Length: 196
Length: 196
Image 1 (cartoon, rainbow over the protein chains, first blue to last red):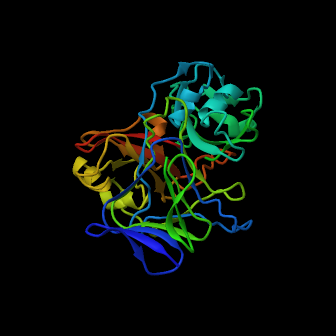
Image 2 (image 1 turned 120 degrees about the horizontal axis):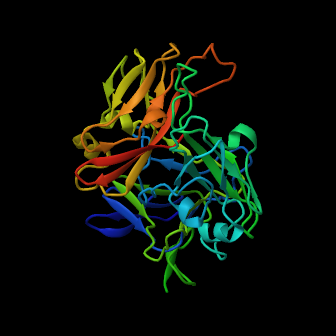
Image 3 (image 1 turned 120 degrees about the vertical axis):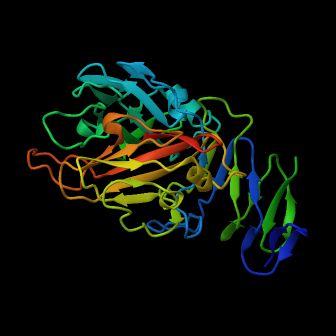
């Protein structure tokens, strides 16, 4: 079965073996400079069996990711998130009251965020963080629904301020919540859950 | 525009259509055994519109990552993180005081961590966790700046002990913080934010 490999002195050549592979042992770049999908949705996958793996060797764990600098604080007080906000993966909103609503983005903004109407797909998701730099201990952010945007209830939707609670000797809160927002309809509807 | 595909019977061949694709419908490996970049920086992407997707199908969520076992506890008390520490993606330290300083790596270590001086790039980032294994409730870790390394303030840099607070009826901190460290200068300077 044919395989190909790219070498530093012989270029592209066939490689002996089974399966389909693109191999290289020199510094390598796979450059695809437009809306890009690395697709491994594998028709052979079965429920409960993971079929996608990123193998970085056994020495190192994190993957280096290139991305934008974090935006400065988006607002002090209530704010409605936008595609540009979530596209940075890290949103900073300062709480200035006991329950400050941070409203999920509109469906139109969700469509834009997920690559536009020609690319948004049910099942697509992103992971992002919401940070509350407020310095008053009970000034909490509350992630709030928008049309078509489902959010978690109660404590799972709240992000405490970046202030110590003088009633306790411990430092429990991180002032940052980690969320996953998943497309549930190509009209821009989403469901958001708290990851941490 | 030419496209190529690798088939199990005909090898590498041109495919009809537009854009560039490497397609296969059997088990696949893309092996690039040196410093490797999957570049989808999308010269055409617009602010606020995400353009990179890893498609695992809609049945399964996590990606399998191959990596090292987490290191044992790096220290009891103060510790300065190293490239090797962060390359594991998970750092355990036993606090032994109310505010135990965990200092970010030096700039030289950051350069090594991000692939050396020929590879480190502004905008590159990794995510990593800091776990506090101590069982004394008020002994928190405090992520601390090093030269060129910016960190946040207050609760956002504190990781509480792995212990219940007997003065509270609630379950407080998780004893683990998730951080993102992003390169801001190729001299090894970074900015770190708390993700959860």
